[in-house]
Image (cartoon, rainbow, N blue to C red):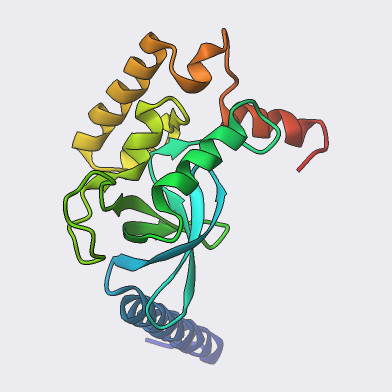
Length: 198
Protein backbone atom coordinates (compact mmCIF):
# COMPACT_ATOMS: atom_id res chain seq x y z
CA UNK A 1 0.00 0.00 0.00
CA UNK A 2 1.32 3.40 -0.91
CA UNK A 3 0.29 6.41 1.25
CA UNK A 4 0.58 9.95 0.11
CA UNK A 5 2.31 12.24 2.63
CA UNK A 6 -0.48 14.85 2.23
CA UNK A 7 -3.14 12.29 3.26
CA UNK A 8 -1.16 11.28 6.37
CA UNK A 9 -0.51 14.93 7.26
CA UNK A 10 -4.16 15.83 6.71
CA UNK A 11 -5.34 12.91 8.86
CA UNK A 12 -2.87 13.85 11.64
CA UNK A 13 -4.06 17.45 11.58
CA UNK A 14 -7.68 16.32 11.84
CA UNK A 15 -6.87 14.01 14.77
CA UNK A 16 -5.01 16.79 16.61
CA UNK A 17 -7.91 19.19 15.96
CA UNK A 18 -10.45 16.62 17.23
CA UNK A 19 -8.36 15.97 20.35
CA UNK A 20 -8.13 19.72 21.00
CA UNK A 21 -11.92 20.07 20.63
CA UNK A 22 -12.57 17.16 23.02
CA UNK A 23 -10.13 18.62 25.55
CA UNK A 24 -11.82 22.03 25.33
CA UNK A 25 -15.27 20.45 25.76
CA UNK A 26 -14.07 18.46 28.77
CA UNK A 27 -12.55 21.59 30.32
CA UNK A 28 -15.77 23.56 29.76
CA UNK A 29 -17.88 20.77 31.26
CA UNK A 30 -15.58 20.52 34.27
CA UNK A 31 -15.64 24.28 34.86
CA UNK A 32 -19.44 24.43 34.51
CA UNK A 33 -19.75 21.53 36.90
CA UNK A 34 -17.48 23.24 39.41
CA UNK A 35 -19.25 26.58 39.07
CA UNK A 36 -22.78 25.28 39.02
CA UNK A 37 -22.53 22.26 41.32
CA UNK A 38 -23.28 19.88 38.46
CA UNK A 39 -26.60 20.88 36.97
CA UNK A 40 -27.81 22.98 39.87
CA UNK A 41 -27.38 26.67 40.62
CA UNK A 42 -28.24 28.07 44.04
CA UNK A 43 -28.14 31.74 44.86
CA UNK A 44 -29.96 34.91 45.79
CA UNK A 45 -31.88 36.75 43.07
CA UNK A 46 -30.36 40.19 42.54
CA UNK A 47 -32.20 41.39 39.43
CA UNK A 48 -35.36 40.48 37.52
CA UNK A 49 -35.30 41.30 33.80
CA UNK A 50 -38.85 40.30 32.89
CA UNK A 51 -41.46 37.67 33.70
CA UNK A 52 -39.26 34.72 32.76
CA UNK A 53 -35.62 35.72 33.31
CA UNK A 54 -33.45 37.02 36.13
CA UNK A 55 -29.95 37.14 37.57
CA UNK A 56 -28.75 35.45 40.72
CA UNK A 57 -25.56 35.72 42.77
CA UNK A 58 -24.11 32.60 44.37
CA UNK A 59 -22.33 32.49 47.75
CA UNK A 60 -19.00 33.34 46.06
CA UNK A 61 -20.47 36.45 44.46
CA UNK A 62 -20.51 35.01 40.94
CA UNK A 63 -23.51 36.15 38.91
CA UNK A 64 -25.59 33.90 36.67
CA UNK A 65 -28.30 34.88 34.19
CA UNK A 66 -31.25 32.47 34.26
CA UNK A 67 -34.16 31.81 31.90
CA UNK A 68 -37.11 29.92 33.40
CA UNK A 69 -37.73 26.75 31.38
CA UNK A 70 -41.11 25.92 29.89
CA UNK A 71 -42.64 29.40 29.91
CA UNK A 72 -42.54 32.55 27.80
CA UNK A 73 -43.65 35.79 29.46
CA UNK A 74 -44.79 38.97 27.69
CA UNK A 75 -41.96 41.09 26.33
CA UNK A 76 -41.37 44.70 27.37
CA UNK A 77 -43.84 46.75 25.35
CA UNK A 78 -46.49 44.02 25.36
CA UNK A 79 -49.63 44.07 27.46
CA UNK A 80 -49.07 42.47 30.89
CA UNK A 81 -45.25 42.58 30.57
CA UNK A 82 -44.88 44.86 33.57
CA UNK A 83 -47.36 42.89 35.64
CA UNK A 84 -45.60 39.61 34.82
CA UNK A 85 -42.23 41.09 35.82
CA UNK A 86 -43.63 42.56 39.04
CA UNK A 87 -45.08 39.21 40.00
CA UNK A 88 -41.75 37.47 39.40
CA UNK A 89 -40.08 40.16 41.55
CA UNK A 90 -42.60 39.43 44.30
CA UNK A 91 -41.87 35.71 44.09
CA UNK A 92 -38.09 35.66 43.93
CA UNK A 93 -36.21 38.97 44.31
CA UNK A 94 -33.79 38.99 47.25
CA UNK A 95 -34.67 35.37 47.92
CA UNK A 96 -32.61 32.23 47.53
CA UNK A 97 -33.62 30.04 44.60
CA UNK A 98 -32.46 26.74 43.14
CA UNK A 99 -32.20 26.32 39.38
CA UNK A 100 -32.14 22.77 37.98
CA UNK A 101 -30.64 23.76 34.64
CA UNK A 102 -30.15 21.70 31.49
CA UNK A 103 -28.67 24.08 28.91
CA UNK A 104 -27.13 27.47 28.26
CA UNK A 105 -29.01 29.41 25.59
CA UNK A 106 -27.63 31.68 22.87
CA UNK A 107 -27.82 34.64 25.27
CA UNK A 108 -25.62 32.78 27.81
CA UNK A 109 -28.54 32.27 30.20
CA UNK A 110 -28.86 29.07 32.20
CA UNK A 111 -32.21 27.57 31.27
CA UNK A 112 -33.91 25.43 33.88
CA UNK A 113 -36.67 24.79 36.35
CA UNK A 114 -36.64 27.35 39.16
CA UNK A 115 -37.57 26.55 42.74
CA UNK A 116 -38.11 28.92 45.68
CA UNK A 117 -39.40 28.52 49.23
CA UNK A 118 -43.17 28.96 49.24
CA UNK A 119 -44.21 32.28 50.85
CA UNK A 120 -46.66 30.44 53.10
CA UNK A 121 -44.10 27.87 54.31
CA UNK A 122 -43.83 27.80 58.12
CA UNK A 123 -40.02 27.70 57.89
CA UNK A 124 -38.37 31.09 57.23
CA UNK A 125 -34.67 30.18 56.87
CA UNK A 126 -32.90 29.98 53.51
CA UNK A 127 -32.26 26.27 54.03
CA UNK A 128 -36.01 25.52 54.05
CA UNK A 129 -37.10 23.25 51.21
CA UNK A 130 -37.70 25.06 47.95
CA UNK A 131 -41.00 23.60 46.83
CA UNK A 132 -42.62 26.33 44.74
CA UNK A 133 -42.17 25.87 40.98
CA UNK A 134 -41.79 29.47 39.79
CA UNK A 135 -42.62 28.77 36.13
CA UNK A 136 -45.77 26.90 37.11
CA UNK A 137 -46.80 29.84 39.30
CA UNK A 138 -46.44 32.33 36.44
CA UNK A 139 -48.59 30.07 34.24
CA UNK A 140 -51.24 29.45 36.90
CA UNK A 141 -51.96 33.12 37.43
CA UNK A 142 -51.96 33.86 33.72
CA UNK A 143 -48.76 35.87 33.43
CA UNK A 144 -46.92 33.62 30.95
CA UNK A 145 -47.56 31.20 28.11
CA UNK A 146 -46.52 27.57 28.16
CA UNK A 147 -43.59 27.53 25.69
CA UNK A 148 -44.74 24.59 23.54
CA UNK A 149 -41.85 25.09 21.12
CA UNK A 150 -39.41 23.82 23.77
CA UNK A 151 -41.72 21.28 25.39
CA UNK A 152 -39.43 18.36 24.55
CA UNK A 153 -36.69 19.95 26.71
CA UNK A 154 -38.62 19.78 29.98
CA UNK A 155 -39.67 16.76 32.04
CA UNK A 156 -42.58 14.77 30.65
CA UNK A 157 -44.68 15.28 33.79
CA UNK A 158 -44.11 19.05 33.60
CA UNK A 159 -45.34 19.17 29.99
CA UNK A 160 -48.83 18.07 31.02
CA UNK A 161 -48.84 20.17 34.21
CA UNK A 162 -47.75 23.33 32.39
CA UNK A 163 -50.22 22.83 29.53
CA UNK A 164 -53.04 22.26 32.06
CA UNK A 165 -52.04 25.36 34.06
CA UNK A 166 -52.20 27.54 30.94
CA UNK A 167 -55.53 25.97 29.90
CA UNK A 168 -57.05 26.64 33.34
CA UNK A 169 -55.76 30.23 33.41
CA UNK A 170 -57.35 30.77 29.97
CA UNK A 171 -60.64 29.29 31.17
CA UNK A 172 -60.63 31.61 34.23
CA UNK A 173 -59.59 34.57 32.04
CA UNK A 174 -56.80 35.19 34.52
CA UNK A 175 -54.04 37.71 33.90
CA UNK A 176 -53.18 38.19 30.23
CA UNK A 177 -56.07 35.90 29.25
CA UNK A 178 -58.44 38.80 30.01
CA UNK A 179 -57.54 40.09 26.56
CA UNK A 180 -59.66 38.66 23.77
CA UNK A 181 -56.66 37.58 21.70
CA UNK A 182 -53.34 38.04 23.54
CA UNK A 183 -50.33 37.88 21.24
CA UNK A 184 -47.78 35.22 22.26
CA UNK A 185 -44.33 36.73 22.87
CA UNK A 186 -42.66 34.54 20.22
CA UNK A 187 -45.04 35.99 17.59
CA UNK A 188 -44.49 39.50 18.95
CA UNK A 189 -40.69 39.04 18.67
CA UNK A 190 -41.08 37.72 15.12
CA UNK A 191 -43.19 40.74 14.12
CA UNK A 192 -40.57 43.07 15.63
CA UNK A 193 -37.76 41.35 13.73
CA UNK A 194 -39.76 41.50 10.47
CA UNK A 195 -40.35 45.23 10.93
CA UNK A 196 -36.67 45.89 11.67
CA UNK A 197 -37.06 46.12 15.45
CA UNK A 198 -34.98 44.22 18.01
